[in-house]
Image (tube, rainbow, N blue to C red; front, side, top):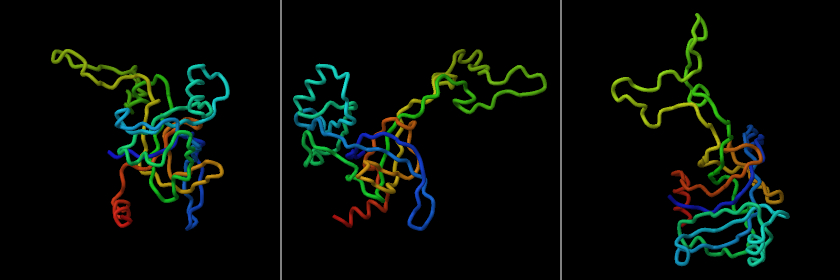
Length: 225
């Protein structure tokens, strides 16, 4: 799978905008960047190709080792540091330490992927976690939302691995593919993408160029070449 450039950002929330034909378009507002390039990883030196990005200024509670690293790079301390893996070394051309990456790398109409962590819902039962039907609610039934029997009797006399049971729900890493960029607002470092993205408002996300091009995009890219 191809690996594309992207930005670290923060999910602001959802709203709606008007399309060119006057229709309502549901969008998620993402504050993406500006991200500072902290390191350029190459396959020859590090074993893989990647960009190390920093997002969000950290003005206090910076440890001395971290402060020394940022001072050596001649950049301000960053709150969030992530790496964006790339597929080819050629994709690293044009990037250098200290360079600021902004939302201008995205264009309205192109497809992007958004990586985030879903909302945590704590410990939940099987009815909410997996959609179990539950027992009867009337006629004196004493069985409503409990798990009930979970294993076979004499054969195999055990519970099958991976059996659905109550447990922690949510807070999982998820990637939403092929979301269309509706608007780009460089002055405010905002990207508006059509549809919903994982995570609660204010949570960190990674927005990157789509790794799975549609047939129309593949044809368009081939025509440009």
